[in-house]
Length: 380
View 1: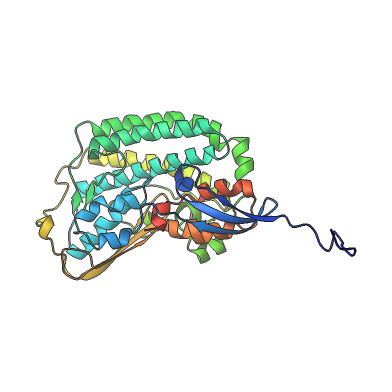
View 2 (view 1 turned 90 degrees about the vertical axis):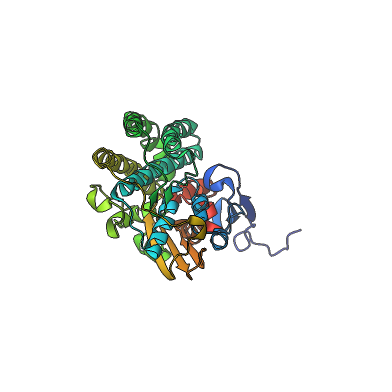
């Protein structure tokens, strides 16, 4: 029974409740959950739960030989594993004073850009599926599989390539690989107008993503946002341009930016990045057809390889943002300390919890995919 002095204006009924969102979807929601406190369908508070998948990489790396970690680091970000290989290899090279041959540097750049395209196609598919556009998901995964065929031909593996090693790459490109890569690129370019018509220019996508999950440039800088998420807020920051590595100083490409800072802007930046990666790949293919030579420098016995004592920090621009590896050697056959500075730790926890507050229940998946994080990296 309500008290006699009950006033519905002064004492409105409570509509607050808690629920778990996920794990229920491929991609970031695959093993990721969020506990949200709602008032109606408005989010009052969000607490992330990263799950327990692919965790403890840093401590595992300290228990393995330097060369053995090549098989471990790709698992830190499954959709985009090559930047992890590159960052780790460069850290070891900096500690060991290794110089990567020119041909190997161009091959590495090719692998990085192929991985970026695959990661973005995967994200586009997952993003589309959250709002019911499953056709785009099927198209994106099919297109991604064509690139995975090239990865498999070059490395023997479709996902965890373990191809970039300290000092170069495991082996040279097989005959005809560059021609087949060109064919896949041409197919992607042929399909691009279809993707744009179905997904990027869709009224459903624009309505669901515009003004959703807005991150101002001020907040992006304060929260440690990097990569496409930072560029979508107006900052043209890209490690490939700001702190060049490999052969990127010799490659022409643009750094796409948007200013709105919402889910749609983040989607548009990634869309433009695929075009730029194709542009980069064409330049790399042309150069690789002219450059001959070794693809790795001589290494000592990898089972008894003592890296000189010291410390090194290297960083790479991945599809998710800036990836950094800090490695410390005490002069022994194993790393003394390894720390991974990945973008997902920021984007999937601190940023996601802040951006979700005040958003609507139905926008959770849209915001999560727009931030494009790798859950294993959170539990690294």
